[in-house]
Length: 465
Ligand code: F0G
Image (cartoon, rainbow, N blue to C red):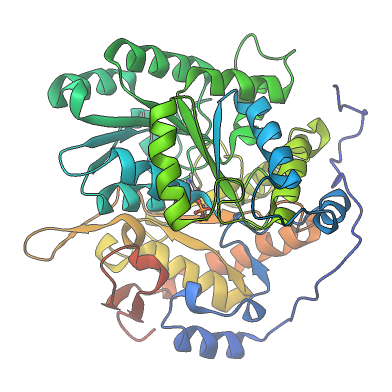
C-alpha cells in the first residue's frame, strides 16, 4: 500500500500514449475571441484555450485498459454484460442494492429530487452544487446550505472544511419539522465550498441525526475517492485502511448516493443513482425509463459502462491518488508563495482563488471573479470558472444583487491530463495577473437566463475594459 519510494518528486504515475495538440494563440487573438464570447469563457471554443481548467468533469484521460474495455462494450438494449459489470462494481463499492445508470450526475439528481422534492420540501447540504440546487429548486423545493463556519473563511486552516454544521442541522430539523426535510445531502468533497473534504466523523454524525429523525441521507459522491485520501491522511484511525475501504465505510452511513462518473470514475460521460430503499428505487426507476432509458443502460452506451466500471477500480490506486492530490496542492502552494489568496488548505480537485481579496478594488456587484477569469484567459489562454455571485448570486425584490457567500475562481485540474510543466505555465500566468491587476475592471451582466445563468450570460466590462 505504501507509495513512498524515497524520492521528493512525485511523478505522473502514467506514460502518455496518445496526445492532443494544443493551439498556442496570441493575446490579441484571445482578446477578440473573448469579446465575441461576450466575456463568458463558457462560450469559447476549446481550441481557443491553451490550458483548460474550466472543470475536472468529463475531462479525464482514460487509461489503455478503459479504452480496451470500450471495444468490448456490450450494446444490448436489455441485460448488457457491461451493465452487469458496472452494477456489480458500484454495488460492491457502495453497498446499495438498487443501482440506476444515468447519462450524468444531474440526470440522477433530476430523477431523485424530482421524485422526493416538490413545493414545501427543504433540502439541507454542506453546500449544494449548482446543478443540485437547480434540480431541487426546479422541483419547487428549497435548498439550504449549512457548511461549518470555517468553510466560509478562505484562509482558515481546518482539516475537514467540507463538513456540514451538525448544530445547524439539528436547528433546521427543529424549525422545519423532520417531515418537510426531503433529504440531507453530503457532497464529498465539497465542490462549491472549495473542494474541501468531509470527515468520516461528520458523515457519522449526519447519519445518526438523520436516522434519529427518519430523514433520508444522500451522499453526492462524485469525488469520493479524493475525499477518502484526505480521511486516510488527516483523520485518526484511518491510516491503515485502503482508500476504497474508507469510501465503503462512508457509503455505509448513507441511504443512497448520486455520482457523476465524470469525476472520480475517470470517464468522459456517465453517472448513477444508488439507493437502498426498494419503494423509492421503484419510483425513480419509472422516471429513469421515461427520461433516460431502460434500467440496464440509463442514458449510457455499453462501452461507457465498461469504462465506468474500470475507472471506479483505477481511481482508488494509491499512486494515482497521491499524484492527484499532491499535484493540485503543488499548484496551490506555488500560488500561496506568490501571495495569491486561495482557499486553504488546498482541496482535492481544484485550487480556488479568493477573487474578492485578489481584486479588492472591484466591488462584488461588478463580479471580481468574472474579472479574474477574463484576465486569466486574455493573459495566458487559461480557462477557469467563476464560483461566486455570477453562479450563485440572487436578486432582491428591487433587482439588487444578493451576493454569494464568497467570490471564488476555480482552477479545476482534469485528471491525468496535464503535466507539471503545464502547471508551471499556469503559475507564470498568475505572475502576470498580479502585475496587471490594478488595470482590471469589473463586469456587468447584460443578458441572462433564469436558471444556471453562468453558462450563457453575456457580460460587458464596466468601464473601458
Ligand atoms: N454534484 C457535484 C458535487 C458536482 O460537482 C457536479 C458537477 C454534479 C453534481 C453534476 O454532475 O455534471 O455529471 O451532471 N460538477 C461539474 C463541475 C460540472 O464542473 O464541477 P454532472
